[in-house]
Image 1: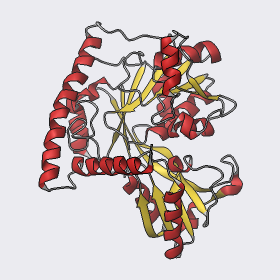
Image 2: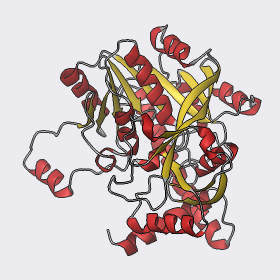
Image 3: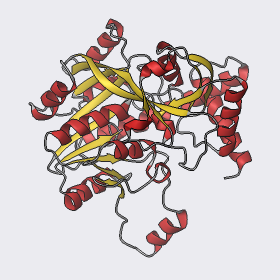
Image 4: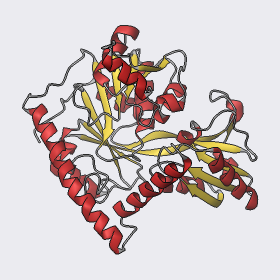
Length: 403
């Protein structure tokens, strides 16, 4: 893709996001919003028809004979799925389970089109899932695997990580090739062909359902009433205060699911270029207090990242925002570090998800760190281990399709 086309597409995507969130109020934006709303009605019909086909058993889900934990949400991006998936996979692994994480590898680099076409024309055997980690070694980089699968593979030794759009195929492969007895579906709430034992739905308390519209007019993947398919509901990004309005809305559609409230807590800073498992690259959070810093990120909710930095005492001189999953080019990074030098910052901070998209050969003119976050349970269970014990080893409520 040419740089000109990439720039135009990026600009169009950014404009669409501004229309969705009501940041544009001109005539053109109003017309575009009406067009998106018409598409949303079509998308809603397709979504509900698909669920009806599964409910009527016209389309069939497939059990694989093992524990299948589905982690997902009703919205696109920004609910903090990856830390929850990581926590669950680690806790299950530590209890002796042989765990595989199955991901579709959003924005990962797929095999070339010519290769897929050749396989189709020659009736070649279906290629196996991409093995990001075999539980011992990380085998793919973030471009080939996708940001989240690579992050999970890097931080979860002993856990298999596979990428494939066909999660039934990936799950079967994990069981046969690696002897896995537990599958965790990353971002799998809308993936119906694989029968889940547990549906864990994540709801971002800071922006639970966007503007209430479905894609592409809003950020909902399916109607809010579909929260009733959840076995457990995690309210993420909580500040510790109960929000009765959100809870009441959820209870209208799902009166039985347990509500577990959690927060993303900063843990430490890690310097770019130092192996991730080395403590030599770590700095305590107190390192930020009073320090002049710049920041950049390409995530769905940049405001939360910037808020963390300010709350930790950083003197945030500038912050550069890119689109979610944006793959930084040399000119993007050069621009960030130039602004850092112009503003005389002492270091640059980014997110862990963004750091995995930087090549190891990149030379930083200023110290570069990523902020490590982890999930902490603040209501609904004494701690995360208790939640895992109760959810995965207690009585399992079956997911519902009576929509």
